[in-house]
Length: 416
Image (cartoon, rainbow, N blue to C red; front, top):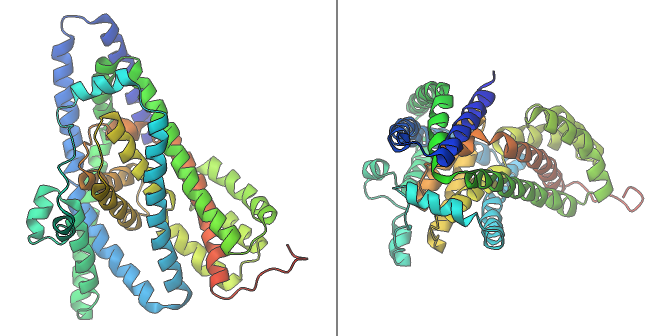
């Protein structure tokens, strides 16, 4: 069985048994729930302990690589700037749209009431400080304390500054530091793989507790989650695709026709990397110059995940709605910035690892509880399909946009 199927099986068994216990309510149910809740919490804490060192190491090495690309200028530098802007746009649009959608279609009151009663760590986001104090909080006066407190926004800022500073020191020292942080990242990945190896047991325990406390209504929470996140991922891909059509001056019919084989591969493989050959062909069909296509498309596959900030912010907004946690504008801004940055740093990592690596810092920055994340990971296969479809559309769209920006003439009326 694949890891995804094993985790999904653990969730189905746990939820099913939990729902039975909710309806049956034997005398020993509360004791069993308490034990399984503790075991599931231990497993979740084992994942949490890797987030800070892993994200810091990824940001330091990722920012240094991005700085080198930007310094090189030309098409590569422009592509990196476009990637960064679109990642921020993706997160910002998602936080507004997902919030509006959930206001119109709120989570089940019965399920949210049960979850609020069962989750001890849930509560209101800390009061918003004055703007000047909030702005100062992004620069940590003690980076070690920020890491210990899980204050991700200032920690991310420090990692960015540190990564940029490393690029300015002597070559030998720079390489030693990059090697050090690369080794930290590799070691954390080993720990994460160990923890994910027992994920079916952890998800089973948490799923049973979830089902026992919420009953059948809990299933509705998971179904709604899949729909909301999937829609936000598709919306993010559509934004980049429209920019490619309008900004890249590509006829709509030609763009849609070129994406048919790309989507076929994306749906069957759920992999942007596997879709790269068909995306290169699509770029050729819409008239992207070979020099631009061969540089920007591999960069997009390696560095650019348009749906990552959108999908991850949608997860955070959904969890906030489930637990009735109000989000003020400053915490939302912090979440949007962190979502864009960590998505750029965590590309190329297995989706199960990326799920926690990217969502953990966002949840910490926005003051949200993470107890639902293991259950959401178990159903991530479903919105992951929308993530892939959105990503491949965005990759083709952004390549067309950069091609136009760097000098490709607009097509004639005959060509259109």
